[in-house]
Length: 512
Image 1 (cartoon, rainbow, N blue to C red):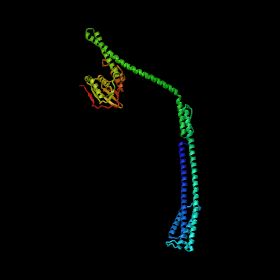
Image 2 (image 1 turned 30 degrees about the vertical axis):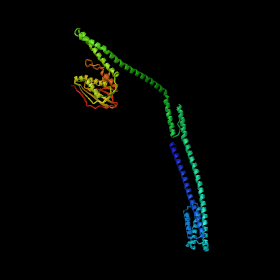
Image 3 (image 1 turned 90 degrees about the vertical axis):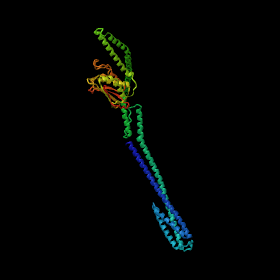
Image 4 (image 1 turned 135 degrees about the vertical axis):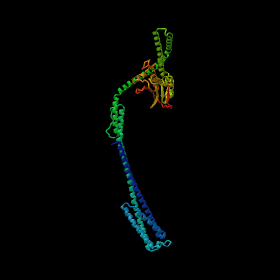
């Protein structure tokens, strides 16, 4: 049986027992109260009969109208008391019946006495002065009243005995009910002890054994109640824990290996960061330090070209031309390498900037190039982002410059767009130029990577690498849209970080 059912049955039994005890005691008290009312009624009857006896005695000494009226009132009161009394036993009914008969006889005798007596006189008249009939009537009334008084005393005694008996019965029932309630409470306590306390103690001891490390111990019982379910569930949990603990050592060893590998990885990452920083510093220092000797070499080579042009043979002029071109390209490469290294070494803190002004600055820097190429440039309304303004100008400037440089036969048409992409702004720069084959989508972002010869298009192949490094430093990504076939379209993203857009009219930059 379930514990909840046991508790419900026990509670119901206790409630039924308490109700039964209450009903029994209530009935006993009710009966006792009724009997007390009866004995009070009998007591009033005795008192009234005593008054009648006194009034009858007065009739013997002084028969007046006032005494007669008092006698009649007391007589009627005795009649009402006898009529209202509810006898219980046969003896009481007989006593009441005899008292009613005597009450009636006393009434007849009193009427007879009034007939033979002169009660109209305001002065008292002695019964002795009247004839013997009046004296006999008064004596008979006295005898009847004494008989009724004796019978009322008997009725009082019978009622008192019954009340005493009821009191004893009530006390006995109270004792029996108390003992019964005590037995019920004892049985409930035993039931709780057997059904709850003992199984819970066994469960607690079993849990302590398992908690001390003995996973082979079982605490389940055969009881089909909540405690039995809990014990069996605990045994299932212990079995699963035992299977889990079986591979604890292997898991611990694997964790140690992973921690060691993670530590080595962290050390490698630190070394890599330090190496990258050192490489960036080296590139900056090397490119910076090479500037001066390279300028000297370039100056003297150009001086040779100007001074000895046409004075030496044709091969010498060609060799000098190669030297000038190489020195110029070397200087361009060093300048671009210096620019690339400064993305990390000369970076400024990010702050909220208006991309509209960023785009305007980039286009202003390319104003001459755009005019010479006859490019038509349009721009969406730009938002505000957290960025290094100088580096973001460089990104837009490089992408627009590439769009102008790698143009086709028609004048360049370039559009700078932006879209809300959830947590980021997605910027785009698209053109109608010669385009890039999808297979080169990743190669173009590597440093010094070129898809065309220097005779076709100038440049060192570092512009897109610089854009990639700047965008990634800002927490975004940059990529080539390989699905766009009408030219070239680059996308890059920048985090929003709760920035609000600056409203502006669309920008259009046409040659002129």
